Length: 251
Figure (cartoon, rainbow, N blue to C red):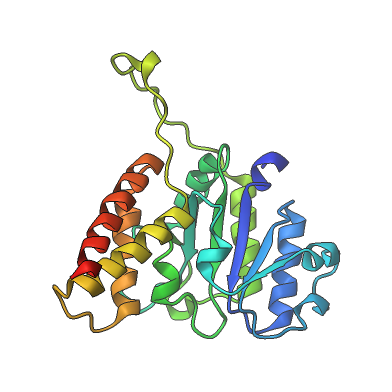
């Protein structure tokens, strides 16, 4: 893969527990020219000293730490989660790594993408996965389907580095295309803002009893990702919902 495309990839480790695995992930990234490592609530504060990160000390030193997944992926237009699946219920589109790598490679030609890996103990939680547009899995044997974190990062980096970008067939021009502006997809932080206002409306409308705010927010976030609203769409919805919320708060 050309270096420019890898500059648009963010590798996000969510709640990693073992600094040696973090080091191994950093080394794998360095092997293939990916330099943007982000960590969400790493378990061990000494991760920057991981001995296995031979040749990746500068990458570890520049790694950014975030409190939430939402903050870590705020600048990404495509968010992909990794999963071994196992016995868990899959609520997203799921692709094998050979299918997913060209799709990500294509997106990374023009926009930022995040690839999420969960902790060694639990993987990505449902709350973590609710931020993802779709998921990928590394094809492994059913008898031993879960991979070591550092190894999983290395396999994904190799697949992305060697993948060919998919090219979609050219569509015929739309009527009056010269007067139409391209649709701008809403950024993750805009969707989170919309989600916050939606949850406020739910609470103030009292039209339903929300048993679990977190679980309900996960469902709404997945819904918004499926709808894929544009930037202008999001601003219009925010305006409507804020007006509704203002009316509800008056009562």
